[in-house]
Length: 88
Image 1 (cartoon, rainbow, N blue to C red):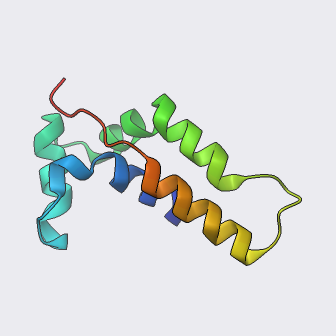
Image 2 (image 1 turned 180 degrees about the horizontal axis):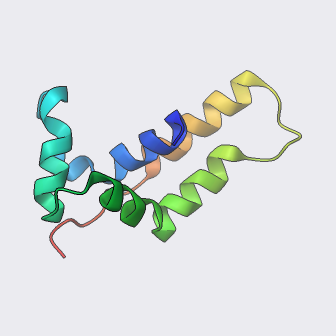
């Protein structure tokens, strides 16, 4: 689990924790999913098409070694991810 994957996970679950202090966010995510198994929740969220698409875009191609290009790609993808509908 790398920092990029964690960022995607947090962005996709943002509706559950938005506005809460950092220390309460994981509990809010578990409450939203009705589970105490954060590992299972992480795997569920990260297996969605939204998460996989974001990871593909963030990893880009091997030819793009520029740190600036990577930062721009990261920023663009994270900002456009639509939070998951945690109600369904």
